[in-house]
Image (tube, rainbow, N blue to C red; front, top):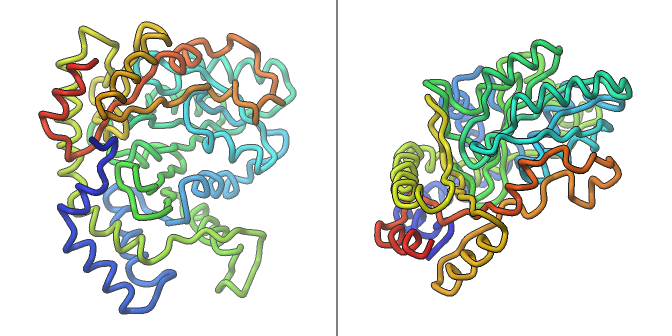
Length: 369
């Protein structure tokens, strides 16, 4: 059994994907060009924003957003304590300081209540200037943006949506990557919409920021890449990846529906055995991961071991919350400040999740759990 079965996806759509790659190779244009332009237009239309700027990966997408805003030394950027490293990693790159915020125990996303407390704590201390919030759509479900947006506006904070795991999710009819002042996603192969290498994108309705993003991602270009008007970076989505993503976008909604059916199966079978994911009213998840919680770490490890013995893969996201990582030891985050994230790190286990899971496979997983 595969944890995220990209091989089954490829077999199902082999002819179209092979054709797209072959056409790109035959054209001989591997950076930029029509496929990249068409993809950016298609993604902007899908999300419902004015601008989509593709880039090399999801980490660069976050960094580009902070660069466009001029976030830097003396600024505080509020980040959920339970997420992948890159969400906070980009903050020191621009000279700012990440401030870790506890999560909601049901959704795994940033707790609005904890966010407001963290903002007030920083304001009271007076050492840093509260500047921005990075809210993550963890495991496929959008964060509570109505509440988070209210807090951001109350304290004059910019809102960055990290939808690396949430692309395709929505709240009502509004899709992920449309909730932030700037929003980002990743096209890493195992993401809901993944390419065959690295890739990412930035989304915004702001024309000025979009122009800055397009400049920063190509060496701070002006008229062209040889007219350098600012210090930038090299972060371009290559044309082969754009061609692959254009084909995958055609069947993306179908895959989301199938993932949601698989998640419903899991939840129906497991809700009385372990703590299953909570999807908030009006939310639709893209199910980047299906993550359950056990009573304690010992039970979690036993379940992972039993699954492995049966040839069933599982994953632990994340064994350490952000504040406990050695890379952030210099921040000296107060112990016990993110208790829910600490508990999630000890009790979470993610089960196989993709659009090509068979009912017999889902049945095997749930029986073992």
